[in-house]
Image (cartoon, rainbow, N blue to C red; front, side, top):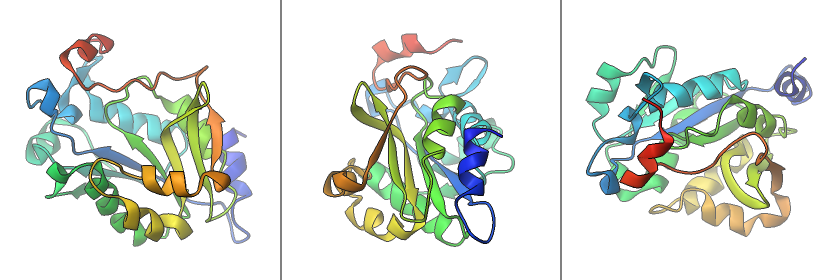
Length: 211
């Protein structure tokens, strides 16, 4: 049994816990000349496909994907079969709006927790997802990947915390404010040995992608 399966089996008295994947993939790539991050090519496929695969292989189900910039083109280009696709018309306001849209979508799913990942971190794969997912213990779970002691993604948020996270998700902060307010409850899961958390933000970062 994998760590993800073990944590799921222990997560609920009525059965395995449901830890859903929540992929934030709405960014317009402003510093990349307006190239939507979800469609950046990596190893022969759009970045959004790699991120969805990492969530699934890391033990997350279902997977909700929040789109924004060029959403129609992303739908037409990328294989998002089996995903719940959420369009965020307010994506230009920042990551906070996409996180709120994703959590609102998940609220109707009955999931026990959300594992939040970013589309522009190709170095964060299934191993990191599974390791953070394994931190699930209850619907009040709060955990994040750590990289040399610094908090990063993915982030595990129990369903009982979604309302509070959404209330603090403004601009580009995402869950940052909530995590700062609840530092004492946050479990940092070191992932620096299995993942690279660098974002694809600028033209120089494109070197981290493989055609």
